[in-house]
Amino acid sequence: MTSTESIIYNYSMERCKWLENISRGRVKERAKSIRERLLAGDKGRSVFPSFVFMGTSRCTLKCKHCYGLIPNFTDHYDISVDTIKRSVKTLLLGCDELITAEIGGGGEPMLYPQLIEALNFLVSQEKIDFVLFSTNGTIPANDKLLDALDNEKCFVLISDYGVQQNTSSLIQCFEKKGIDFCYNTNQHWVDAGEPVPQSKTIQQLTAEFANCSNTKFCKVVIENKIYSCARSARMHLLGVYEDNHDYNEFSENCPPDEINSILKSCYNKDYAVACDYCNLASLNPVYVEAGKQPGKKLSNYTYIHRDACHDISRLSRENQELVAEVQRLLDRRNKRHFLSAIVKFPERLVRHTIIKPLKTWFKNRQNAGKTINTCELESRIRELSEQIAQRDRTIVQQRDSRSTD
Ligand code: SF4
Image (cartoon, rainbow, N blue to C red; front, side, top):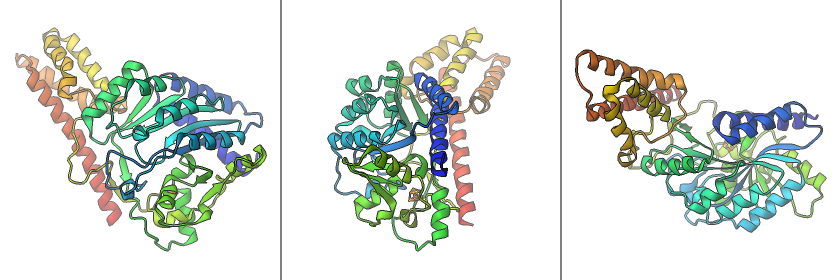
């Protein structure tokens, strides 16, 4: 194996491990078995970790610190599904296996008018193991999309940007259909800054490029160009900068061996000129609130883990006096947008932040001979939820003040 091949191999393993960690159902099982197969030796097969196929520049949000610069686009565009199909077909000629093919690179894929056709096409490619997209959770899924996603290869990453009502209903649709997804809450972004040149030295560019996770898994394909990252692709589209150092170009007429070399050369760059226009991988990162919408307040109710609902149910079962009250509360959760959000909190954290204090509260009430009132229970959970949100805000503030010191 050359050094570039071992980098690609390690990224492929890492990609499988990542999917294994964040998924739950059939995707988890498949990711595990693919990782184990790679670990056992890939017998000279050319496996690549990830390519992202750009679909649209549209978005329902205008996040203040969007690293993909979506709010900077005034004229939106969609890349036709035929163009995506052509890119995929050509690119696959140069590899034996692609762990993840993603529709994205900034923008909201659920606004991409040909998303379903693109997903169906990607899923039908034998060489592609998984098909992903990330959504901001603001758009309901229709039946056709749910049918397309109902596949062992499909996985959706839902971001928690505080649009709790819509996100909760999207999650419920996915759950009902058995679609594998993860809900990314508690995210902290790094401010990538304005897309202006900063005259960084080659050493700085090299250090930041090496420090950026986008270079591993976010190589963005637009037509016949593979960009180092989504920011680089978006800046090219915006005309912010023009530098052919940052992309590799292939053509439909290239023989498979040549395409394979082109794909490999995407992974042996030392730096990207784009990093001069970006602080995402700065060695002194400035952390900012994820998905912040100028002038809008985020919901505070996205912090309760579904397991907390289960645990509360269990606690209530243990205490017959509570059963009716808690059950009523849980049954009403969709209507009230309460306890319906699902987050991937580590179990221990949930126990300490929600379950343990609730248990103590239940016990104290019982010892005092008081019955449990639904409204009190609800406001107690809300209080705990707010405490977690406050703790997270404090972490962000502390990081911010550390980075400005
Ligand atoms: S421009 Fe550089 S630092 Fe910014 S996302 Fe791309 S690779 Fe990372």
